[in-house]
Picture 1: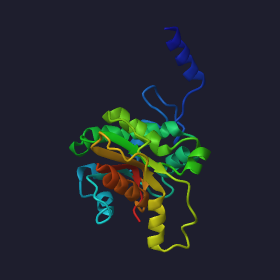
Picture 2 (picture 1 turned 120 degrees about the vertical axis):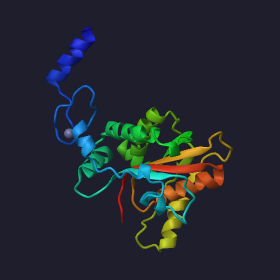
Picture 3 (picture 1 turned 180 degrees about the vertical axis):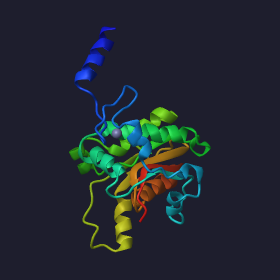
Picture 4 (picture 1 turned 45 degrees about the vertical axis):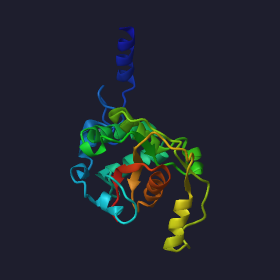
Length: 231
Ligand SMILES: [Zn+2]
């Protein structure tokens, strides 16, 4: 009782505000208000197993299912939210958005057999600077909803890498691919990994990670990302 009175008083004097619109959040809302959340442009890729994200990996790596939940566009609310996540320390926002992805995945037959969640590892220097990997926080929200555990140990990202700009397309790809490795080559008990990223653009990092999980660990791989930037 005392705690409830105290927390009500606390939120009266220090209201939590929506990261996007600044409105006071009610008790059911976290980080971003419902109105801003439902205004984000959904892709509805979950209902289309042959969607543009899935097609992106055609002929590159054999993915089971792939989706992004929202469209990424410049100057959008989603860009603002991603900026908060990546550069303003708002990792809880990544978790909240991850929960909303997880709620959708939970209702999809395609993702039911996923038994491990693998966030794409961030470059070690970036993670050190940021203090966290935002994809891991998205994964935490998804894990809470679908029940599969997160494994951040399967794939390792190395310290590389020289500038990509003066390399050929093939060299760039080899550079991305060599940035990742499987930490343990022992057989895992997992069967179907769900790879998580924040934004899909070229898909090169996801392709590299997926290829490793398939080739070295003999897993099936599906992909889910918060946003899709069509190029
Ligand atoms: Zn809002």
